[in-house]
Each structure stands twice: as C-alpha cells, then as structure tokens.
Length: 241
Ligand SMILES: Cc1cc2nc3c(=O)[nH]c(=O)nc-3n(C[C@H](O)[C@H](O)[C@H](O)COP(=O)(O)OP(=O)(O)OC[C@H]3O[C@@H](n4cnc5c(N)ncnc54)[C@H](O)[C@@H]3O)c2cc1C
Image (cartoon, rainbow, N blue to C red; front, side):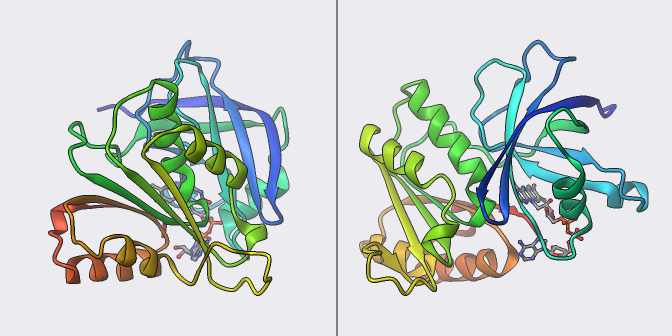
C-alpha cells in the first residue's frame, strides 16, 4: 500500500514534566483523522540521517474523537537525535510530516478477561488513549488495571487525569508505582511495576496483558508473566526501543 504522509501543524505544546512535553497536532488535510486507541504515528524529521533513520514513531496519547487533532507525549532522550530536534526546533505553529495511523496494539474485540496495562514513562500514551476512549464512549469492559512506573512522583504523567478517571470509571484501577521516591508523603506503591501485577494476580485469573515502553521493562515483564503460567499469546507488546 502507498504510504500516505500528511503535514501536521503543531497547535499547542505543554511541559508535562521537566523532560516530557505534550504536543497537539492538527492535520488540515483530513477532516477527521481516524485511528484506533493504541495506534501510533511516524514522524519524518529533518535530522540529516538516512531516510528511514529520520523516522521516529510516537503513540497517539489522545483518544479517537472524530477530529483531525491528535496529542503526542514525548520524553527528551539525552543525546537522542530525534527528540533533541523536537524539543529544540518544534514550536507552536511548526509543521511536522507524519504518517499513520499504524500498529495493532489495540484493545481486544472481546474483552472477556481482566486487562493489565503495564508501562513506564511515556509508555502510558496508548493506554491513556484506550482508557479515555472507553470512558467517553461508555463502552462496557472488564476490570482494567493501569500499572504505571516511574522513578519519582514528579515524573508521573497524567497523574491527576488518571486519578479522576479511576474515580469516575467503574472497573478502571490506577496503580502508579515509584522506584526511587523517598518522600514519606507518597503513600502509593513503591518499587517496580512487576511486583504490582504479581500481587494483583496472586489468584492467576485469566487476563490480557498489554506492555508498553522500553526493552528492559518489557523483557522482564514478558518473562515474569509467562513464569506465572500465562501464555505468550495473552501478552501484547509495544516496544519503544
Ligand atoms: C511504536 C512506537 C511508539 C513510540 N511512542 C513513543 C511515545 O509515545 N513517546 C516517546 O517519548 N517515545 C516513543 N517511542 C520512542 C521514539 O520513537 C524514539 O525512539 C525516542 O523518542 C528516541 O528518539 P531519539 O531520536 O531522540 O533517540 P535515538 O537517537 O533514536 O535513540 C538512541 C537509542 O536510545 C534508545 N532509547 C531511546 N529513548 C530511550 C529511553 N527513554 N530510555 C532508554 N532508551 C532509550 C533507543 O532505543 C536507541 O537505541 C515510540 C517508539 C515506537 C517504536
């Protein structure tokens, strides 16, 4: 299939944490940019590398709503060619060349088992899209556990929004866990994401697992979930790098 590239216009940028920004992009060529919650877009960045090395993918953090606007949430990687360009050069009003939607990291058609959404950092992007999509459209779903890992409380992305969703959305459970926070004010989980799902699944009930983020977390989660007796077909991955 021919690849369709669009020119998007950045309409708004917000610093979400000290190293992570939210970017809102409008795609004027499309009356509506249709995608499924969990999919991503690929940006073609003018970073003077070989063509395919100029491409960087980003999960759509907003939910499908029939508009031609999407939101991305991007963490600056020290020395990363793409994110250095994005953070230094992209301003409100800048254009971005993008294609999509891409990917099959989407909710199952039949949601007949509990769903565990496990991520670190900006890996929350596709899960925010899924949770908001289910909530806005009042779609029936089983228990959904969003297990989010970061180092410190200040790093938590969309914290207030996820807390509000958990309060409003029956069956949606939010479990942020912090690996390095030493403040006694933090009363939530401490440590890595792995202990959280292992504790929640001590009864080994049937479940779907969606893992999103960086290789170290994903490799360990895959191995631990299979060691708990789950089949690899129950595990869905979106590997960021
Ligand atoms: C399908 C998909 C969706 C993605 N969605 C997002 C998203 O929503 N938000 C987002 O911030 N990123 C996302 N990424 C990652 C993104 O595509 C880039 O890899 C990232 O922004 C780094 O690009 P860079 O050019 O700055 O670094 P590069 O110069 O390309 O990266 C250098 C190396 O560092 C590794 N690396 C990059 N970032 C990290 C990190 N944070 N921790 C550890 N190692 C890292 C890479 O694997 C690479 O080997 C996604 C990746 C994929 C494949």
